[in-house]
Image 1 (cartoon, rainbow, N blue to C red):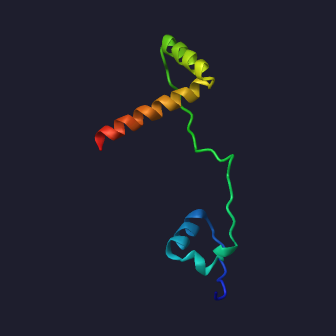
Image 2: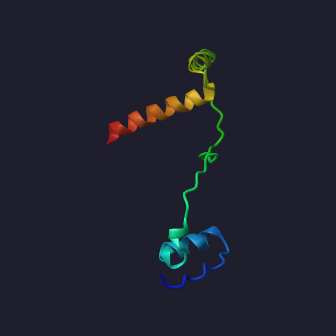
Image 3: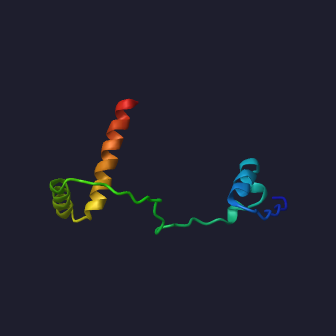
Length: 92
């Protein structure tokens, strides 16, 4: 393998993104020396929202979440994701 090129210093992420979109990383990095890495604590980005629910609906959600032994907010996310996936399949 020929000598690797030096990776330049970048002013910001946009500049770095543009650089790598035009370059082949094998000219800069010896991937044979790479090792797998696990990012076990990495979480997807979330956004806090305010959602008004009727009290009976919230109580039912809490009851169902308690049966599954998960927080009710997590159950809401599961239900939303399932429903969104169903709806998206209908449109395809």
